Length: 393
Image (tube, rainbow, N blue to C red; front, side, top):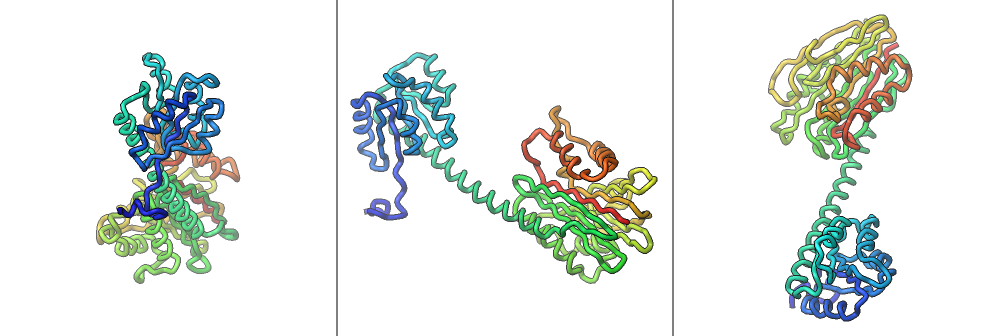
């Protein structure tokens, strides 16, 4: 006796439930006999069309066999009714009807039927179609279960990453931020901390790819920065920090993953901002009485992505930091968006939007998110979205 045949064996496969909705008991009995040689099938009959939806919901079958002509219900309307129920929207449905008209078949498929058989079909054909549809349905359920498990894992990872982001700072430096993880979780993270009484470090990084792996790499980088585990590099020198991270996180030792990063140190005694970039989009500095200034990218210091090229040098640039200056950091998930016309929203357009929204006072980060949500063509962001603002008094 096989293991699957042992009574009560928890490893035995679950029976395949087929629910037939037909007002003629003789048809239900004929189908029962066709399926009798297959012990893996469990047949449930419903002979009253008015009770069909409730019966199907209660049984949650693997396959529905639906008659079309019934005295107390329209079989085509029942097909539509099943599909309106969220739990039955994808349940395989085979119409089993005496009607052979092409228009009836077309209507059945339009309402959501998966298959159509003129009754009574040959037993071999009926069994083959039931096996095909029930197998596909179970495989879909398994994929859904795996996806839900992955979604729970990604949600947990996103919550963990967000828990490591420091709360908004107050005092000489005020910060505010928004973090919107994508459906598949990217590798965004950011942070800030005081190096001493006068120097304030601030950074944002974006690991390539999606999933738990990139998220964990970004957490590892955050931890290294927080405890200054940079191999002796001066945490106050952005170029030295980026070079140290490039040595610590070579992509060949981290499953081919690299990351972009913007790192800056504000010195409130000398009123200077030292910064460097490793392949990251430019930050935007808004100083009182001055126009918006991009820090990094093509205009200033910008080295390659971190981990991509061994032993490459990274530079440090310095700009004045008058009292009241505001610094905006972001990840590319907020501006690399597909527009309805098929083009991608440009970085220039996004940065113009940052400057515009900054003129409107508090709430600018939420307004920037609203701008991006209005641009994109999907319901969710394709990549993580990070926005970080710092005001230096």
